[in-house]
Image (tube, rainbow, N blue to C red; front, side):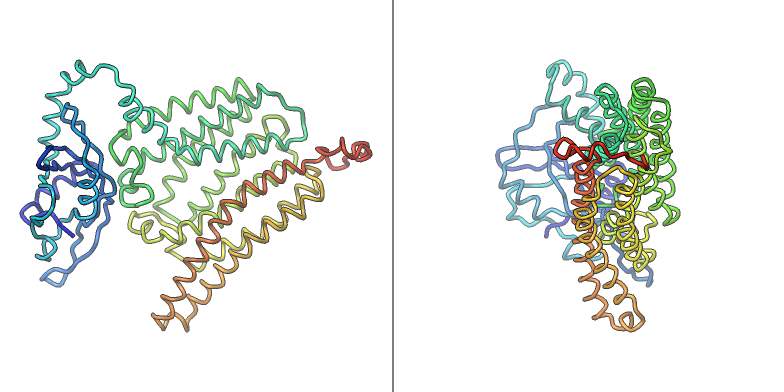
Length: 464
């Protein structure tokens, strides 16, 4: 591997401190002189010093290379071979204790590298911005890259879609009359509220997200959007979302939507760095969307709504606990207090506990006449599949953290590798579990198949 020269160590520290997660290089080949932006992972390592203490260093590989248009000119495309070579060989480090690693770049590389000081780059950008605006005019591609995509990423689209779908499924399972206009307003309002909560979350955590591989590509971390811009965007779409729910659905749903923003964007985000109770608080936030969907057409006094909310609450533990298990060190280094590293055995036990809880919650949907009784068969199979892997994960962790295993490092490490596999299996099962459970509930909704069995429609629904 090729590292930056030792003489650049001081400059590297300044660059990493000022560039908000990006390092700017100028790669020079025989044919071109190309400004390149490197996004680095922010991984830190500890090394000893001569005094016997420890020192923290930045030591990271580039994740991606993108042409840097900050100098106000159109630059030629980077040759694929040059880019591939750079990606494999370049590393960013400020650890100069190892001379072999901190040496100069080898001569056989097909390019030369110059580290660009952020102050120099900023002055060049400011001097060329006016001419760039007049010569380039309106650029749709730039609009998409600089505005549309970063602001869309602020909303965490996949998570927002999941929140919206859970509200829609709950609305579809409601036994009371529904309307298309109400469904449309519920969909739009819930999506905007969820996006607002996620934008607040990103705006508050860039310094912590920068230290995790899973979150370091977020727009605030990259500097595409500032925290203030994230908050302004969250306020805008949050206001639109709550207003849509208030005027298009009803005040109860609007209050729930506003509560979702406050709990996730502020309470949960703050608690993540203080106590493991944050996972339970996050799961509580997950119960709000199904309550919103139900409250859009039905009273929340109906026990079926709380069975659905309970399902969403319970599901989040096998899902998140197994996800956090395999990146527990990243959470720890970033300062997030998670059960996965604070108490690994409790983390696995909680996953199993709430996997089992989903059996009676699904039973409640049939008992309160939301679904037919056939739902117990296929939902039982899905729940058993998730519970099986959650049990394997828990049992392996129980063995790993027994007094006997903890005395044997080799046995513990082997057991931990097995637990990692079971955690991934449980996580993948949870990803498929929730949509399967909700889709099956809609398929088995009470009265859906009465047109096939006319006699069933005449039976009174005693508990509805």
